[in-house]
Image 1 (cartoon, rainbow, N blue to C red):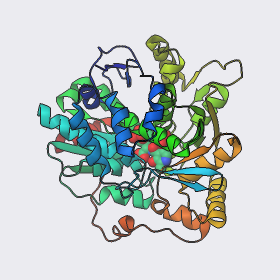
Image 2 (cartoon, rainbow, N blue to C red):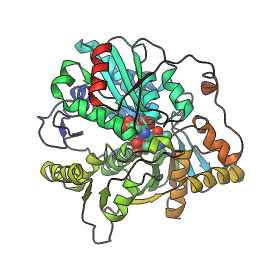
Image 3 (cartoon, protein in one colour):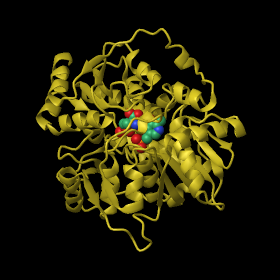
Image 4 (cartoon, rainbow, N blue to C red):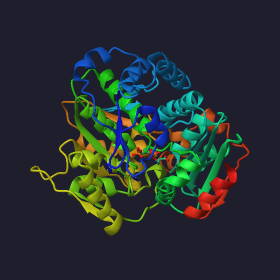
Length: 456
Ligand SMILES: Cc1ncc(COP(=O)(O)O)c(C=O)c1O
Ligand SMILES: N[C@@H](CCOP(=O)(O)O)C(=O)O
């Protein structure tokens, strides 16, 4: 039976279903399995599987308290909503394999995990009874993917905080046009970091959290990261190569953490290329060893406008040898001084597996235009950041897979600025005259708590 522990070491081990319902650990840490399985000797057999077959093989190693037939149905149902038979297909564009993760209902990679998590929540609630009140924070894509994962589901309410005016207009509309009675959108007067801080602080009030049956759809929830590991395996197998590199546009460090875990489990990954926009705390960290706060700036890749990266704590836990005490020391440094530092290795870097870089607005626009002109392929601004950083680190001997994390039609203005014309998608075009519902709210923990109490 796979058990889950907290990065901060103060929680007795719990099973998978409890881990899913707990979200953030009561000690403020993030949940991880006690140990990672080594799957090296299964790769050959796994490489012949369909996406859903592979998802079952990977997830069943971790969801050991769900009977196989139930898990299979959950997975099949979750990916039946995708509009591509492969779920996560790769296409060759120039020198890169572009891994298209935007074929789900909300056209972003978040659907891969959140269609599954929504069904998982319903499954667990049906077995156990009770209600779930989800409190989530989004910089643009998690929110709508989570809302579409649970809209209309019995015994679940979802409260999503987004930073007012800082998502793309269509991202906002994808959330606020969902009028189901169990969906609540809150436009917070602040940044995504403020929203995430409100969420984590509210979860940190353990009496409030348990008293109001709060749960998480953000990547603090282990099931999110787990479901995202699958496409690293799947896309690497599609290349037929012995080893691959991945380029990952990064904000909250959830997506690239899934790649790190796949590598730790035995998937041959030469390099993980970490790409940030101007909010570059993570690329600075991997290049200098210093993780130091700066102000969040608004960019044309708004979903990555993040400084305090939630899943960085999970990586740091591995980095310090899975020593919870050392991890807590570093997290306290960050809380008190706004920065923490790790030693560089003998090669002068934090971790030989990672290379990191950043792409600013001008370079992102230039990349979108160049790929459209040269290959007739329109990258979304987040994907473009990953591609332009990958160009700096490409190695001849192994294929580079660039994660395409959203459909370009979600970011109309950036695409017009880059190429002179918009990209359309029928799902988004259908929202043009949609009615919307959203409540503005102060950047204030008590205001959000009061809102929750008043609407649960
Ligand atoms: C389109 C898009 N690309 C990249 C990212 C960054 O992913 P992560 O936060 O997991 O690092 C996000 C937000 O999570 C996103 O919505
Ligand atoms: N970029 C994300 C931010 C939240 O990240 P998560 O992976 O922790 O849910 C978004 O689009 O909301």
